[in-house]
Amino acid sequence: MGKSVLVCMSGGVDSTVAALLLERQGFDVAGLTFWFWSFEKAPEFGGKTKCCSLDSAGLAARELGIPHEVVDASLPFQRLVLDDFIARRRQGETPNPCGRCNRLVRFGLALEYARQHGIDYIATGHHARITTDGGNPCLLRGADPQKDQTYFLYGLGEDVLSHLLFPVGALPKAEVFALARAAHLTAAALPESQDLCFARGDDVSFLFDPEDYRPGPILDSGGREIGQHRGLPRYTIGQRRGLGIASPVPLYVIDLDPDRNALVVGEESLLLRDALVATDAIYAAGRMPPDGTMLEAKIRYRSPTSEARFEPTSAQAFRLTFRTPQRAITPGQLAVFYERDRLLGGGTISDS
Image (cartoon, rainbow, N blue to C red; front, side, top):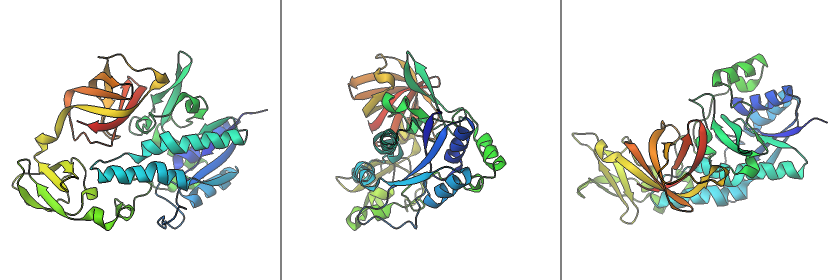
């Protein structure tokens, strides 16, 4: 009897082609899509979010001839992802909800569903690869360096990784599209989503109370008030556009101070930092790198890796000191580190 696999389907080209490839490999394939928007006072998105369209996922499953089910995960998504996102933004952070959702909601629920239904594996369309190290599964960066998504997956434990497949992780994105077009799949013509699944464009204001958007002072790096901001959740470290202030030199957000409801701006050189502290640390195979290990680390999804020295500060926290100062290290974002292509661990930036 062949192996069975549950594919988490967003309706996009990556997860659709993942299911296609697994079918061709002889797996018994079923599709699953999570729905996150049934809790009280949830916004109306007309049947879809930015990263998961029920209509597109259902169409992809029909085109592939596989069964497809929608599971409502609204309550854990609200409790573990949205509430945390709102709280951190109120604290002046810029959280990364995708990493948190993968770590605490999406993959765990998918594995639980697979076990309940006697399915052997789960799979997604993420651009990542899985290998073994001393018998333990670990993550490798996706073959397409422009699409690698291991940054968002650092928190997956061995229990998930040992049952997880990434069918498109060894492919360049152009080949994924080519496979979809050759199979006449509608997903080949759909645009890629790069935004937060719950954002309307770049706007997340519907998540907050009017009080969260009360105006406050914009201070220069010397503490002098030079303008008024429109509510701290609208801003993030490193931002230049939308500040509404005139200056003979470009000014950037260098700090958010919720205690004073103040936005602090300064010249770009003030964004440079050579170290960060991260919490909620998780390490591949549960093995913390030795103190002083030189690693390749990145501080946001789109940033390149940079050489850094690892120093554990507790069982759940670490410090990275970079050989080259980094621009706009942002509390709430993820700090993830590698040995060549192998992901070794990561955590949530708390300070710089």
